[in-house]
Image 1 (cartoon, rainbow, N blue to C red):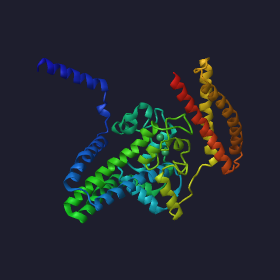
Image 2: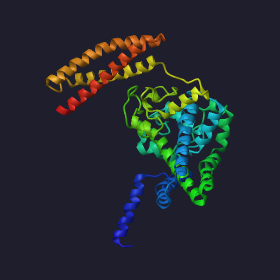
Image 3: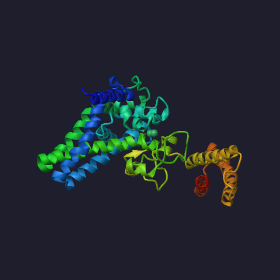
Image 4: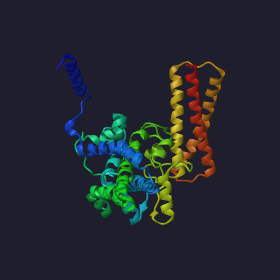
Length: 392
Ligand SMILES: [Zn+2]
Ligand SMILES: [Zn+2]
């Protein structure tokens, strides 16, 4: 070996020593599955499309599997099983368990156990996909390693009483391979022989698994990184309409972490939440019942509390600085408006807090007025930040 080779070898070994990959704790089956499916999706599927193109059948099969398995996770695993946000009839339960299995995210029982721990210990050591360990860890890294001792699944005893859940838990891998890979390939074969079978396996099978998985992974990574925190800034969970588009509506994650048993994640009428819409439609046709909703007074109280905390923090920070950061008429006006908003805001807050304590209902018109005022306060604070930044 020449000198250059020796130096390169030394550098490589020091690189591996620095990144400290605990190879003994790698979850090899999961790791290889995630790597192979990703490689097939980014190389195999485009090669097939380049060679054979795509027809209406392949496109329809991909779209069907994408929505069925994606909703299997968001509507089934997440909102129905992990949070019990509504009750579902057996056709919905079976469909979500079978198609949820085809997302290759383990059984509903395992998934819900991890997810309930995530809610209980969010941003702490016990959170399985703790964002404070880094973006990549929360997105996919936590699946590669078995770093901690196997945690007892002691938080899903309610689910263990459901025979359908236990049936899926036992057969989840078989269901995933048969319904998630073999069935689309068989349908493709019936449509267009071996060429159709290969296309369906690559597109509706493997590529769809990769897309649905990363869409779910985004909830643990991007939904704890991008967006606003209108309900509670104590946790890293955030609301983002962009993330809602990529995650079947789960992107309103700050609301979800504040009110996890609500069947809605996008609680406002205009918010994009396809899972909420699907639940609502199933409810209308009698397949789903007992939808759980948080009272609008309680939701608004959380928004007012958060807006007030932000205003108090801003005022305290300015007082601590001792001097006015900007000497210009716009800043003085902004400070005066902030004080006025703060006073009227505190009156509304006290009234609303009392109403929530008494479980009294407040008219929609008044709630809308107070909500608008909270929004005005938050917008005002953001404008003050921009003004301060411009003069800094
Ligand atoms: Zn979360
Ligand atoms: Zn959740």
